[in-house]
Length: 348
Image 1 (cartoon, one colour):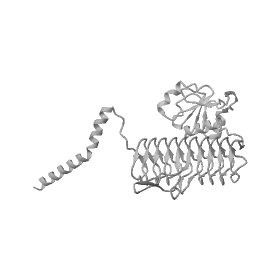
Image 2 (cartoon, rainbow, N blue to C red):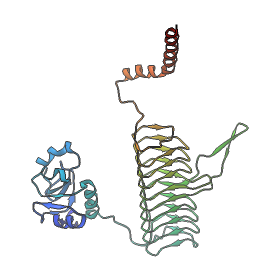
Image 3 (cartoon, one colour):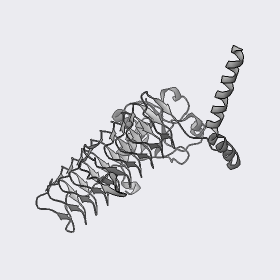
């Protein structure tokens, strides 16, 4: 969108729409959002971390979003609000609306005669929609997407190019799937028989609730028997693997490169840091925070923050400490023997 074509909004309009109190010139107009250090005279910035507060003195922003406890930290026009970061997100969405293609089925798309596609939906070139699939109102199916037989996609959902939805999977409304996402591939189900792996048919589905967003190249396997379930409002980053029969609770957020093995149930409002590894058949309670790089090998029954990684060290020090860790069991046994000997001496 060209800069001069972008609509501007006054601080008064933004505060009226999203809440907050304007201090200073409420008529200041905003065309875009930007960080404090690079914002220009028609841009709105925000402060959520006090370590960046010194930038308020030098920023060229037209105005800033501040919390109530930072209301006097700047002299320039400002909106005082409960959650500056959330308000920033809403303003950014207002100024930079999602641009959707026109409704209709592209001439180079392939849509089965027994699929149902809403008149208001958009189907891009190279897309394939199989028999019995249902595409809801205002859905966008990007170029080269595949929607399998019997799959259902709810209203206002968007599939960016090259998304694959396997047969019978169900997506709710306002779901966003980024490029390379695969929903409903077979889970990793194998049985060993006479020295050879025997494939176990994966006959469940993937069910995705409303307002879920899934990042690029993330994969969610279909259930082996029951369904894999992603509840409403879940946010998944890029390159995440979710195994068969997992259940992810509402409004949980998971950062990139996390791997979740099959049949694990994660509660509501959890946050998993990047590269976390979750073993299979576990249960994680609601409102659990798992730090990046943490290996979770047993269930977590209480809310809280859980971390299981060594802090970074110079390599030589890490080698020494790793060597000690390898011998912890031997050290424990020696301590037990010494304790037994002390007890015997005490009896004597």
